[in-house]
Amino acid sequence: MAKGWFGEFGGRYVPETLVPALGELEHEYLRLRKDSAFRSRLHYYNTQFGGRPTPLYFAARLTEYAGGARIYLKREDLLHGGAHKFNNVMGQALLASMMGKRRIIAETGAGQHGVATAIAGAALGLTTEIYMGRKDTERQRLNLVRMELLGAKVHTVVSGSMTLKDAINEALRDWVTNVRDTYYLLGSAVGPHPYPAMVRDFQSIIGREIRSQILKSEGRLPDMVVACVGGGSNAIGAFSPFIRHREVALLGAQAGGLGLDSGRHSAPLLAGEPGVLHGARSMLLQDGDGQVKETSSISAGLDYPSVGPQHSHLQKTGRARYVAVTDDQAMESFRLLSRLEGIIPALESAHAVHAAVEEARRMPRESIVVVNLSGRGDKDVDTAASYRGGGR
Ligand SMILES: *Cc1c(COP(=O)(O)O)cnc(C)c1O
Image (cartoon, rainbow, N blue to C red; front, side, top):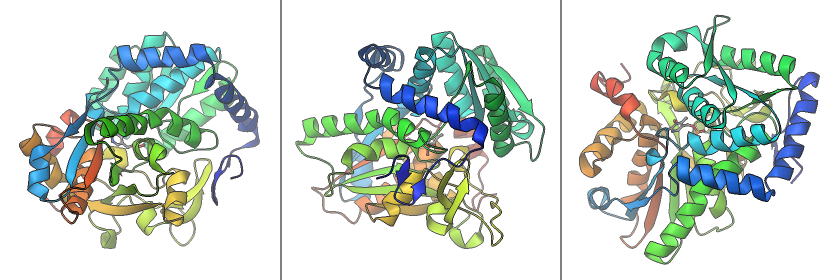
């Protein structure tokens, strides 16, 4: 496959001024990923700071409830920071540091990626600056406070709709201006090459651990791996080591919001068309004029109009399948997992739980389904407490 492309998806659609920076990043990444000092430092932070490996937990009561395949939970909710995001930010922050960059910048919507970046920045002693839309700083005050506690400077963005896409624009402007000493730390397997491949590689530790853990407990590979898909980083990390094992089915859960028919959802893989956003060609929610559509999801982490290019390719080639899970269904699974297993999942992860239970119930009892539990749900308990159904 051509460099930076997943079939017809991916690429590097950026202004001329960013081409050298992306070239340098690609070159340094390819060099350092093989460097033994980089690898051993990353291993150190992943294990001693992050708490890896995370357990692969047999969900006995959820399995009984579904009445079919044996369901395992990959416990990324137990990772430092409470989500899989740690794998990516730690990898990229260490890369930045070893590239000699003293300053990292990132954009954040709900604040989860900003907090994760601030954690990695603090651990490595890097100057950390986060761009966040004013609307989001108001909606997600707690994450703003967390970032500041962790020593990051938060830039409140007041242009445009004052949300994530404006924060991305401001962060890109910063990068163009300060590219010499600044590293742009992207939050998912999206954006221009080499980000989708690099973020996938850092998140692939999830899939590699699943592989060795399930071989140990069951003596074979799972029949299916399930994950939620926003930008697609936790899913591609869980899927990646299994792509060449065609007997392992791969299932991604996108945010169905109020339902695909309502038009209010965040499911580009189910209702989008190919288009270019944030530097890459991928499935995209757009109107007839190519304008990016408004998205909607109960979970901020899945609320994105496009998706990592590799997922578009996996779907197009039939290697992975994607379904939409509505807000109501995710909330039901959020409560179900809390009650049955004593685990409050992130609402994002609850989408995957729903899809997994639906599949497991139709599979024979000796089958194995692994769900990637991308994060914990403490951040979502207020949303759950005031939820009235139908997205209200
Ligand atoms: C950010 C987030 C996601 C969505 O991001 P991906 O890149 O699609 O993985 C999913 N789950 C949790 C818990 C998150 O914080």
